[in-house]
Image (tube, rainbow, N blue to C red; front, side, top):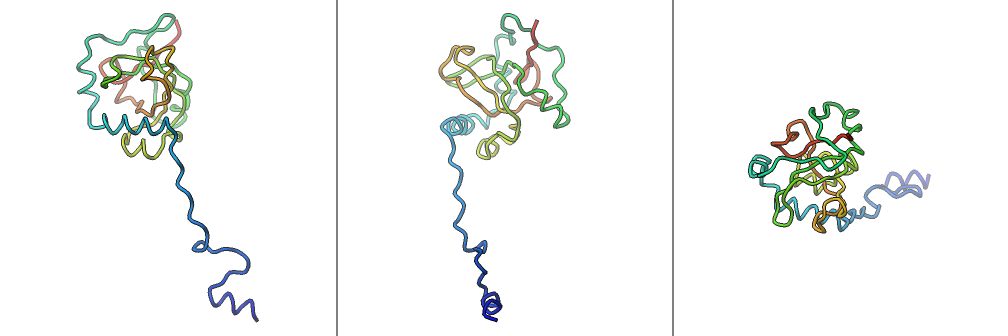
Length: 164
């Protein structure tokens, strides 16, 4: 009778109700994510057309690589998974970084943070840049970006690299 009385009064029997649980802590952003968000805030308003139409040079593949004539099919999630691990050239035009730079597609959309997604809604992949390949300290780390059919090509944001 006592237990029923407690339940009727809104008390639980040894388990915390959702209202009694401690509020969940918000996941802290990593230093890398903070840098990405800062870059996206600065550059999100610019369109691919604004950036890429200013290029003086078309993308040039590094030694041992060539630019894929056809972009990858990215219609389905399975197609997107095949892009992970690929090398790409990505167009950059910021105060610190300008030109086409080699990156490795490191992860899919599930690894794009909410803050990055908020600033760049089309972000669907994470690209890893290495100072040794880019030659720039400013372009060293992981960056969320949109890799899609719409943004693919030498007059757009990115091109896929294939081994010779």
